[in-house]
Image (cartoon, rainbow, N blue to C red; front, side, top):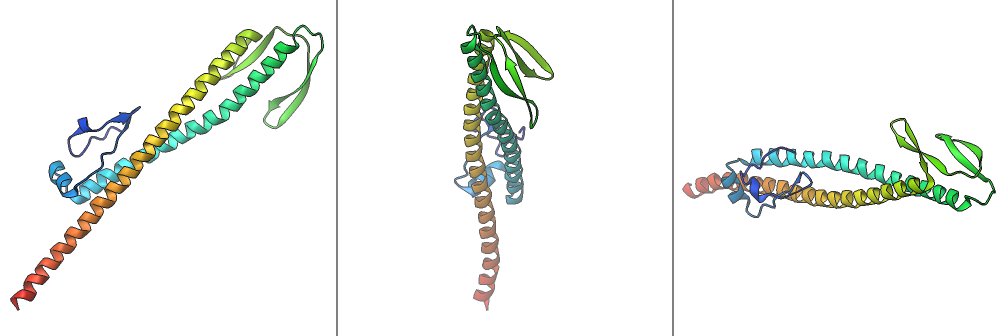
Length: 195
């Protein structure tokens, strides 16, 4: 979103995490004269900005979906580690079903264990003690929830900017239509007054 403001007043714009804020246009005629743009150029600029907002929105929504899927997985892992810690030292084995591949499960008998293996992604799995694994998973869960909160706030800010931009496009378009009608009526009114 590196497009500069057509009015040259980039300092008026604020932003949130790289998303530029849309400025509400009170008076279209003043805006056009100050920016030095004709209505078509102003419309093109704001429509381009709207498309940029839509692209960013799609990326943020994809990140939100990923985090919303990740949080339950982390919580499930935390439950399993807590269950293993609770059963440690009791001497009784834990019978568990685990996912081998998508939709394929296997049953395992887990004896007393002091460690667990966590899949970190990118074909990396590390062995941790139950305490370390629990601490790591809790930290990951807190980070994921915090990231989700930030994403939700970013999406709300972005939706506000989309709304302001759409209103601006409508105002500039309607102002242009009104000006064209006034120009058409003026010559007709002069010709009628002359005859």
